[in-house]
Image (spheres, rainbow, N blue to C red):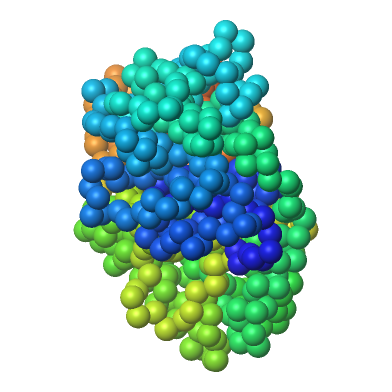
Length: 520
Ligand code: XMP
C-alpha cells in the first residue's frame, strides 16, 4: 500500500522471510502503520523522524554470506529501537560483535522457551510457570551473545531465544512472534511497538475498502478489465471490488479446466451470473487443459502449463471483448511470497502459484492484483464489507491449478473422476457433521500408488486416497485437524465403499512447515 509520508511508522527491513508480510499484518491489526523495505534497497537516509521502530525480518540467508546480503549498519545506529527476528536476531547480534553458527539441532516447529529475566518486550508474554510455546524455523543460531546484551529467555536448543540490550533498545528473538502458532506472539510485537517504540495507534482497517477501490480506479482509469473468476473467495472479492470501482468496464471470465470440484461450474454460473448479475463469460476448456497436461508429472511443469494456458485463454477472450488492457486476479500475499519476494529480497521459491509464477514473461495484459498484500482472513472481512454472501466468504480456499496438484504423478481422466468423487464425499461429510467451518481447508487427493486390499473375499489393487484437513489463520502455517475416530472411520468406509478405484484411505498428519498445504 502506498503510504502517507507524514505518518509515524514501524519500518520492516525484509531479508526474504516467508513471514515478512505477517509482521506487517500484525502491526496493521494493532492499528499502526508500517512499511516494508528490502534490505537491498534500504539506506540509512530512509530513516526519518517518522521512523519510530525498526524490525529486521527473518530470511533464508546465512549471516556469513556477506556478499549475498547487504545491510547498512548505520540503519541501526540512529538510536531507534530495533527488534531482530530469527535471521534478523542473528544479524543484529553479529553487527554488535556476537557470533552465529550452525545449530547442532535445527529447530522447525513448536519449541518451549523459559523466562530468565524480566523485560519490557515480554511484559505479560509468558504465562504461568514462565514458559511459552513459540514457533521456530532456523538452522543457524547465535552462539555468542554480544557485549552488553542479556538473556531474557532460552529454549533447550537456543540459549539466546530472546536477548536485549536495554540501554540501546536492541531486542532479538530466535523464533517467529508474527506467526499465530507462537503463543502470545502478538503481545510481544505489541510490547515492542507500543512500550518500547512508544508509537501511537494511527491506522484503521475501516478505510481499507475505500482505499482499495480508489487505488483500482487510479490504476485502470477508463480501460476495460477482465477478471479471472474462480468462484472462490479471493477472485469473488476482486470481482466485487472492481464492480464497485469500474462497473460495466469489468468482464469476468470463468474457465472450466476440467479440474474443478464436482458440480463447481454449475454453482459458479448460478451464483455470479444469476444471483449477483455480474458480467460473466463461461469458458469450457476441459479438453484443452487435459491435452496439455497429458504425461506431465513434474509439479512445477504442471503449474506452469496451467498458468500459461489460463493466460492464453484470457488473452483470447480479451481480444474478443476488444480494447482490454488489464487482467485482474485474486492473488493473495501467501501466493506471492511462496513464488517470489515482493520486495525483491531472497525469499526461497517454494512453488509457482499459478496466478504468479505461471505467467508468461511477455504477457500482453497488465496485471491488477488488489489483494496482493492481504491475507485470507483479511480478504474474508473485506468480502463481508462488500456485501458478498457468507456462503461465498466461508468457502475453503481452492488453488487455481485445482485437482491437478492434488494428483501427484500423471493426470488421467479416470483419476480426475475418482478424485472428484472422493473430494465430494469428504466435503459433504464435513458439512453434514458441522465440521466444515471449523476447518480452514480440506480436500481429498489421489496418490500415484496402488495397494492391495480385500473386498468381498476378492483381492483388490487400487489407488490410495489421501485426506487432508488443516487449521490455519492465513495459510502461512498450519496444523492438521484432529478428527474423532468415528468420523475418520465413517469417511474411510464411505469413500472405499462408494468409489470404484480406491481401496485405502490415509490421513495427512503433517503441519506446515515442514509440509505445505497442497501436495504439489
Ligand atoms: P501451500 O500448498 O503453498 O498452499 O501451503 C497455501 C494456500 O495456497 C493455496 N494455493 C494456491 N492458490 N493458486 C492459488 O490461487 C495456486 O497456484 C495455489 N497453490 C496453492 C492452497 O490451496 C492453500 O490454501
